[in-house]
Amino acid sequence: MTNNRLRRDTAWAVSIFSVVAAFAPPASAQGTSASSELSQAIAQLADKRGQERSKGFYRLLKIGSESTEAKGSASVKPAISGLLAKNPQKAEDVKAGLRAALDLENRVAKSGASLSAEFTDYYGDLIQAVAALNDKKSAGALAGALGTGYMVNNALVALGDDSVDAVLQQLGQTQERTVKLSACTVLQKMLDPGNRNAIKDPEHKRKIQQALNEGLCNAGKKN
Image (cartoon, rainbow, N blue to C red):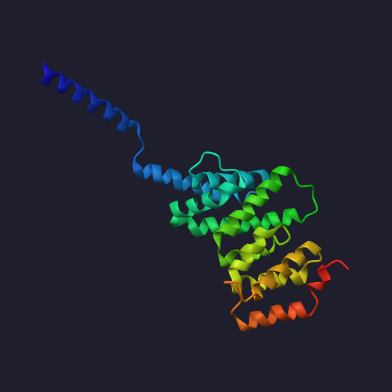
């Protein structure tokens, strides 16, 4: 009796497993699906519609996050780290998409149009994501966000020599006081010998010192 029951139970378990396996997508299909989702999210970052770009960004965070809730500044950095770690073959595409998105949103933020609370939240999270990349190719996009706060300043200082030209370009072009002050704060920190990412290139040091001596930073201060 016991042997017959064991055989019946084993046969039942095998049949259930066979049914489940028949309907489950193969591992290769699951990988393809995840890759497709990631590619779609990256493409969505370049959409002409701002709301769609925001959706694409949070789709990326969700893919990289262990949590089902991807929004919120506290979750951005670990989500980006997770995204890149899980998808090394797409890492450069992700970085390029985020940089391009920040370039675009910088222009939106400076357009003079009324900005919704949803946009400002998304913009802040996007800045944090690009800052978290710690990628020298992000220097231009981050410099374009100067004036938004310490997060951009710290990211540019951390890039050191790789961000000098981008910061100097913003300083020379902008008429906005907050942007000038942020750029000057970054440049001064770059020359601080106590900063582990202090500028090492003599030509960069000369350019920074020249900008400071020419009074470009004084022009950003209140009289």
